[in-house]
Length: 267
Image (cartoon, rainbow, N blue to C red):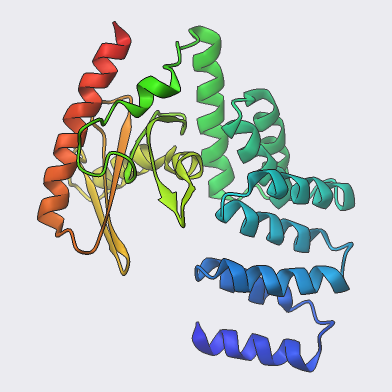
């Protein structure tokens, strides 16, 4: 990737008007360099203000850092320039889902799928939103107060950050996950919407039986994901100073707390 970045930067330096900035900005975004990605993309937008793909890219960069309002503005601009832009419809569908406007989310995601019928992320998102819409029509769940949700993990190690409880529709039930001081819980929850189903499908395909947990290790920390109940998914994040064995213990305690809290909320 480093060589590709150098090559793209060199090409853009030779021709500042080149559309290669789109590839460069996307690579920087995926590499976890949002500031650098934003600089490249904004410079490209200055030169190509009517390019829908550039507005879509900048919107995704903004969404990555939690600036969802401005991301929505950029996706709307992209649609004003290209009404069938699949990426913009996908982004606005995500925002509508986050706001629990399931009808708008379905509309945008169906247009995104029409633009690219082979995109598996849109297919999964449509399934999740349709299920959420049907569940709401069948029996609208009583939502717990924000104050009660914050008490779900009260007294646990790291209760203020690093624990996130998500419902099957990808909506935050309790907890908080922050990146750079910005709460990313709702974004993370939306991405986790289909994680349980995918884990179960993969486990069956490779003969593991029912899945019980996923452990992911990275340079900045570890993540443990498990279903405390069939109707919830729990994500636990800790930095690398916490060994995987300790993370497992923390996750088990958090799962017990989540089950108790959900049982109490259901009464």
